[in-house]
Structures are given as structure tokens and as C-alpha cells.
Image 1 (cartoon, rainbow, N blue to C red):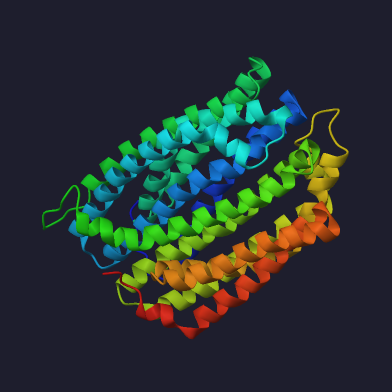
Image 2: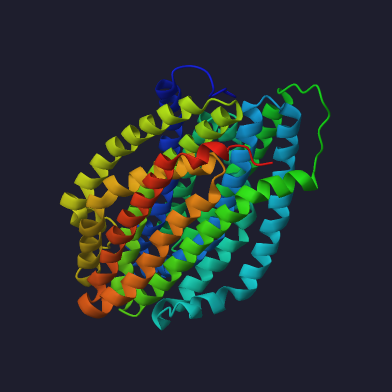
Length: 446
């Protein structure tokens, strides 16, 4: 299953490598959406709002896992492309050990501060207890979530995008089954949603690590390798720390936006919760394609093949624009029907209108943000993290500032208007950085 991405037709190789990743993230996001759908359908609007209110906080922790995934995958891809298999194994084991330590520390801190975090974002009193309960159970399983994300990053670094797909299919089906069993069957409410995710993610993590260990045994190395290297950790950190900061700042920005949304009441929170899950589904699909381009870029630059990277960028743009078409059609035309999926029989009204308006405002700009995320993949795979962060932080800062400014003028609709503006300006920056070509001189992080 390990594949060298430096050989073969760039477009064909990238499509074959990325499509399983795309399918993987569809399954991953389906069970994230299922959490909210089942909570809303079987436990009511307040349960949907409680899960949604805690969502930006859970995304801070997820951001650290994703940033670590990016850091290790870029370095491992570069070493794999350069055929330095001993150093590659050292990078893998160093990543796993440091990730386990970090995840345990974050879990402890999160459990101690869960109620404080919910208070910080002005969570309404009628959903506070359920929101805090969901957050505590989620954090209890964070070790599994963290190590699973790192393991999938290592698989894709080695050119294997199919194995994570198989785990996600199993995990997604298991999570949805457990959601229905715990919430509709046992009537555990928000706690049932959280425990379903905990158990499904835990099983996927254990199986992924066992499979990874077997795959690494098959990679023959002439030189000795270390189980942990401080120097390798520094090398990985040069990519991982900016990625973690980038992901975390986005999550912190989303917390500011969530706090603003929370001031409009639980019905608006419920509608936003449904819409943001659908929007996150879409953006994560585009981001996953960008991650495929990132691994492709890192392997080829590790092998000194810059022209293949440029062809991969073009192929990635085509993939993302094609993927944006169905999302735009479904959300713009049938947005109300999509939001209704999250509502119980007596749900609707303000929540339904909130979600529908959000989707109609942001969905036409999927064609814009998809281009940025492919460009980000090249910058990230090349190790040009400063350029990558400038474009991403521009988007974040604009969205947060404009959401507060426009909310004062247009009400809650003004918050949604900040998304297209931030996306558009950040896309222009990313494209400008790509055309400058400075990323091509930064491809190996020493």
C-alpha cells in the first residue's frame, strides 16, 4: 500500500492518491453530522444547540491534532521521497511518542477547565449542563483522536491513502450505529452522542496503530534508526508548531464567532450548529484534497522534482472546483431541506431560517476557498509555513473583525457575510505567493 508519488503521470497519480482521502473525509464528516442530526431528531433542539455550543472548543483540541498530523506528514513525505528510510522511521516513532505525551497533558488540562471554557463563550443556561457534559466525554477520548489523526497522516505520507479510508468507513458506521443505540434506544441524550464518538474513535485508533506497526516492519533500512530523536522532533516542530498555531488560531477565532452567535439565543445557535456542520463538511473535503497535494508536493520536492509539483497544483485545482459544484447546488438551492434534517418534528422557525441563510451566503464562495486550500497544500508541502500562515491569518482576522462589525449593522446575517470576504482576500494572497515561486526554494526543512 506504500506508494512513491514521484513516479508516473502527475495528474493520474494525484487523483488516484487523493480520491480515497476524499471518500475518507466524507465518511468522517458524515458521522460528525450524524451526531448533530441524531441529537436534534431524538433529543430536541436544545440538545442540538448543546452539541453545537461545545463544537468550537472541541475544535481547538482537534486543531492541535491536525497541526501535528501536518507537521509529521510533511517531514516524513520528504524523507520518503528522498529514500532516507532510516530517518523516516525515526520521524514516525518520534512523532507517535511526542503526540502521546502531548495528548495526555491536553486531556488533563481540558477536563479541569471544561466548565470555564463553556462559560467563556457565553453558553446559555438552558444548554450549559449538556454542553459541558458533552465536552468532558469528548476530551476523555482525546488521546485516541490525537493518535488516530497522526497515524492517518503517516499513512498518507507513505503514499497510502486507502488504509485510512477503510478505518474511517468502519469507524463512521460504528459511530452512527452507536449514536442511534445510545440516543434513540437508551435515551442518553447528549451523553450518548459523546460516548458513541469516544468508542468508535478508540477502536479506529487501536487498529490504525497496529496496522501502521506492521507496515513499517516491511520497510527495509540499511542504517539504524532511533525510537526518539530530539533533533528530529525539532525538525518536525518547525512545520508542526506553525500548523498547530494556524489551526488553533482558527479555532480560537471560531470561539469568538460562536460567542457572538450565542448572544442571539439557543434557536439561532441550533440553526448555526446545523449549518456550520454542513459547511465544515465541505471545507474539510477541500482541505483533504489540499493535504493530498501537500504530500505529493513534499515527496516530489524531496526528490528534487519541482515541475511535477506545478502539474499537481493544476490537477488539484480541477479536483476541488469539480467537488465544489454539487456542494454549491445542494446548499444554495436545497439548503432549507438540509437544515431540516437536523430538526425534530416540532423544530424549525428561527433555527431553520438561520441555517438556510448561512448556507446561501457562503456556498457560492466554495469555488473561491477551494483554490486557496490547494495553494495552501503546495506551500505547506514545501515547508513555506510563513507564507501559508500569512494568508490563513488574514482570512481569520477579517472574519472575526467583520463578524462583529457587520452584526451590529445587519444583525446575525452580518456574521455570515464575513466568510466570503475573508475567503476571497486570503485566496488572492495564496495565489500570489504560489506565483512568486519562493516556496520552491524552501522545500527541505533542515
